[in-house]
Image (tube, rainbow, N blue to C red; front, top):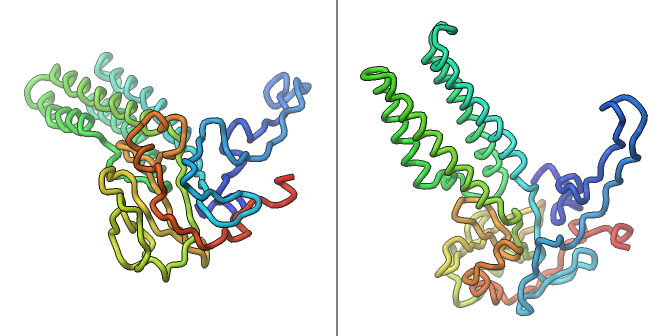
Length: 304
């Protein structure tokens, strides 16, 4: 999250959400003409949005303004917009790829023109999602589900046959690949159903080797590191990571959705998952000795 300041590192930036971003004055004819309205000023990012919930009373929760000991939610820029808008354009290229085949003879090589447009459609689907996953603490290796892999591999295997055997076989390949794309869209929507947040706890790294985790958790390493530190014994998608910001060290609680996207376990969308809520009834660490560094907290004049 190098693109945000320390003051925005936890709560996020105002322009990430429509409810806080505000809007510029609207004009009668686009960028010209008289103003229809004066616009809306950007508002303060709240400590908790309506779609966010809080952990149980067993957790020690800090305060974004006052600081102190305990866990705090860290928000990331919602990835849905940067992924789904290019995906909507990819559908245009999929449809366009059919045109050279339905109306042949208008390009130097109809099959290559159709293939090029189809590849562009897939590139506009995969590249933005891959980039978004590498910005977030997510798992790009889980970008494709098994159903998408089967459809893509089948469609790719069948594709050469429409050149070697019969051009009509190409429609089978097209249908299989398009079905794989549709299943991938459903996977994205499932992963975007919860906000991309995680929970952080300031930590003294010299204590990690001897720290006692909750009995449901198991260490991956007895040495502190920036990376995986521990996982939940039953729910492998719940993990603890070591992270750094400047000279400060934190333990991060990640819940990685089955689709590979980071999800906030304490949100309206995940609240219905009783297993996750049961696993997080108590925090992974009961000990919270360090206070939050002041530079990450809300400024006093902003909280008044």
